[in-house]
Length: 363
Image 1 (cartoon, rainbow, N blue to C red):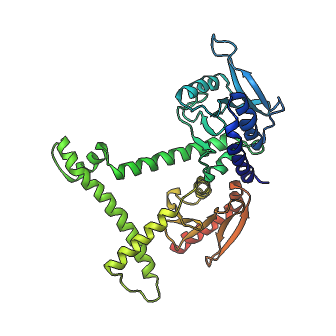
Image 2 (cartoon, helix red, strand yellow; image 1 turned 180 degrees about the vertical axis):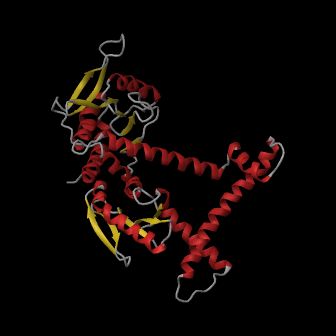
Image 3 (spheres, rainbow, N blue to C red; image 1 turned 120 degrees about the vertical axis):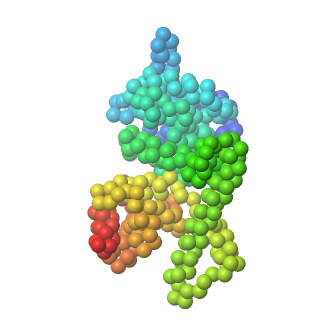
């Protein structure tokens, strides 16, 4: 049984036993201990997992963290556990914050009620736990795209620097995407002011901002529609018998493309694979030229967002088997099976050769 299967089996177990875990101790025994065991940490071995670890805080003595997880003799995770009937809130996170600060080797802090796991780290300041979790894994609302992220914390592959480096970049990426979505829906005063300053002169008053806010929103929507139409026309121009699209056909095609793109979900694993490819190609090209274009059956990585310049494809839709698709000089794809993201490095030279071929042909 691979890691993903273990997590799915654990999810079923949690749903079955959750109604019976009515105390903190039964929550630990029935839900949290199996979770740690699924990650490869033996809860019966005190060299690996210390229960009720003493983490004295300043003048307060006898403070105990529910779990201290060790690797290579050092504590790498501290876990604060609550009963599965308890709602996790900021006060519970504050308690974990104090423990985390007092255990200098800990890089991961987990607050859990056995169903919801909030993962914290010291991404902003060393040895000071961040206020917000970098990942929330909830067995009640299971997000399968987070299983590869969870696997990075497993005992057999744990590397704090690698896991937290990826977590930080993905954290920033999610924050920026959320900000972009918010700004498109309801542009802030700061964003409206930025654009108004370029198209008008004179003082920018509150009334000016309110007048331009719907204009900025409309400009975003128009730009997005133009990009969609450009893609549609690009496909139409590649047809053997190109015919200009009528207004109604264009509207229909735009709606279809929107439906298709709305059905596409770029997983965190795909994003991490994309970031790895960018890092590999940094030696031969500006990483900004390496772009991602997700599809329903694969995630494409392109040079200059040009469909005629594929670098590779990530075939990560299957929960059990994953491939990276590489291309030869004639752009024929070969699907190579990989066991994890780190296997992408095995194709580093081939990826560099592919990009170099595009660069050479352009000269």
